Length: 342
Ligand code: HPA
Ligand code: ZN
Image 1 (cartoon, rainbow, N blue to C red):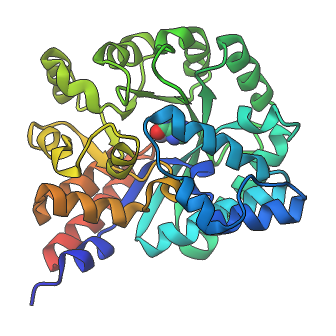
Image 2: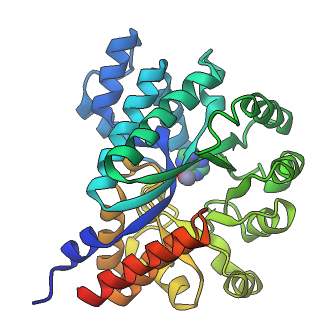
């Protein structure tokens, strides 16, 4: 008997490579932390928070996302935030996560770099012990701020590198894209590469294909986050296919932020069928209406993805992970075994 599409997706082993931990802050936890820390929120109830999540573009989301992050103050807050995400990931059979975090959002409010690293890392280490969920941390620079501020952030975080060597594997670039091209950060990326960090960047979410070129050639990234506007440039598409450069696509995010009007118009399936190494991710699940399996299910239904294609997406997520070849082989074998028995 063949199982339902939902059950097939639920059981499929997968990796999440594009998840902003601050974007997993559910309204209930936002309220609880606000109370714990004596922070006044501009909302009367959890329902009112959810009702405010009607976005017109990336910036309209970022305004609320940064405001919400203000409830995060103590090490325990960052632990609770990350631990809540871990529960959701495990429930969705996410086997590996590489999460983004934005230290500048917190250090500017007087929260120390140590507090941020420590709370997130404690939850990720506990997740490894309790659930076998492996993970990495990718420190993101806020692109609306200056490159000098990004450099200062990297230097400050480097004091903690040894202590978090098991988790902190890379750097990334997020926040408002248009007007802040990748090249603005070429020096800090050169420094990060010299320090043997993995490097990724958001590009081609709202920004033009030129920003994807900028991330590839200016920053020499190993993955593109989003990258959906690459399709507008056929030479870029050829480059992505030939190099098998992974794109961490976030379908429900693109829908919520009006990058696409309707999920049925999303280019995920077209790019997959053209041979691009695309993956499915949740981005900011508390704000965009769904974690990994919700993104898989909505995409599968809107784009008529076959089970072979869903398996390919899971395979891509493990191939694109920052892990040893042995670890990747093990995951890919698990995906193969799943396909063979379902
Ligand atoms: N794009 C840019 N910056 C972000 C995002 C995103 O989707 N999520 C959180 N910060
Ligand atoms: Zn993102």
